[in-house]
Image (tube, rainbow, N blue to C red):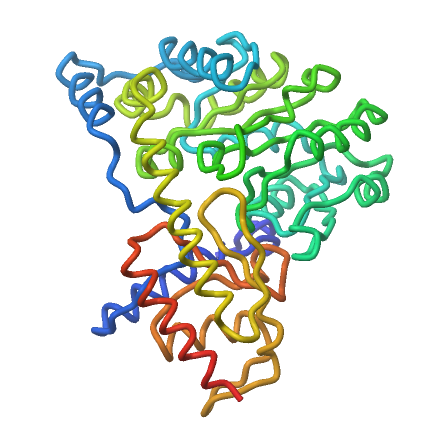
Length: 396
């Protein structure tokens, strides 16, 4: 069978690949602690579950409008105004099967072959692959731990060319946990003001997991709002990963284009999950705040533990639920038959030797680092840190 050429242009997400390896090792009877997937370990709050049950009892089991049920699109608009000071109409909202789906809709609607998309690195694994699927060209702008993994305006200016079509980033960031504050966003906006053809794709899925300040969206700057796409969803802030609800808030022409595309290959997303999402947005936010506090406690626990391990270089993440230490000091070391030449080698060594899974930074455009998810119970994190320390101390 001859498969399409595009299959060879993309890679399987390393996050998913490491999760597979972890499950295989666990199936062999090993006690594996997985710190590889970005998935909250909390159960979806009860009032959201109750809303889903109520929707089923009321017979909401039919197809929905492609862009989402009216109640949810309105609830999203109300949320954006209430929490972010952003004014949108329901026609500017498109609800999709997860934030990943929402981003892919936007890329499909915007990018032609040869168009360039600037992506600050480290970046979420799927950004570059989505761009390549549409024949676009990812242009990476690197920011290391010494910059808190945030690019400067000078770096942005140097990356822009006549082919630049979009700029795509996340804040709070997956994988680094870095957060662009208002002044840093304002500096980037001044650059975008000079380039009217660049669309800004702002992935804000970790909005509610912010440890330093109220989340600030780049769409808050009126000078560029008409070419900013806000990406968000229910998975992280409401512990609703399996419900698969994401959305965009976008200029009307782009929201209509995404609705048109979605109508041809998925149509409307799950109706029960949409009704549950209305309850999540309109109901109490106490569970979300509880989860944020738990993540901050875990952040402190994990970063403190990593800083006690000689050879690791780690910043203090301001949001999300990831640590992203530089592990390059271990390159060139070995233990038994294990030779550590890359971050991938180190991840495989720790998985097989001490049964802790994490993801290589190579997957995120940062080959000197590894991503550690602390979206799991405190006691598991304590055990995992002890195992990581033991495994790294064995390397000579």
